Length: 173
Image (cartoon, rainbow, N blue to C red; front, top):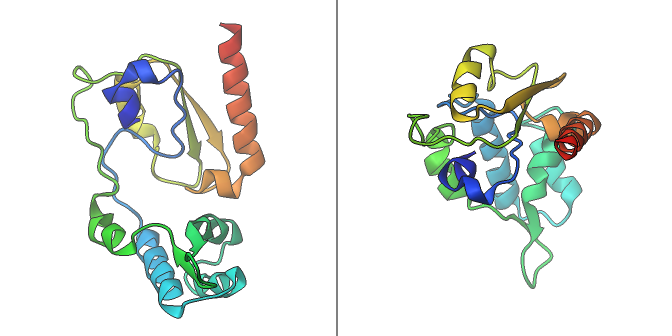
């Protein structure tokens, strides 16, 4: 969303996934995910299954764990897995992760086609933020998918279908 608002000429269409153009308070799950990822890093795991076993203490849902483990990579010249993202930097900035950098839709507006995909069991794109969505992204449509915040991991086929339908509809215009 930020790129579309800062440089709209670079974006042909936009698809935010379970995020809205408002400041959001992150659920406490993010902090426990970070703790689990740090435990994985400290354990110097050599197999993804080991990492998943550690992460399962912090998250029961396999699709969410699989998504988080996409950050796991082999350390160069080693058989140990590490997190590709800087966990210390993430930890020190986690409180700001839900902040949206724009306040005034009159100063930044993206007028291109926009599909907001939201999980119906998530609080990040609630009905009460839709007016703000419309101010920053006046050509928006919303698709609801029966899942939580991790839409792509929880409902990959429903997400794919929503995106394909949106893009096909753009071709008709």
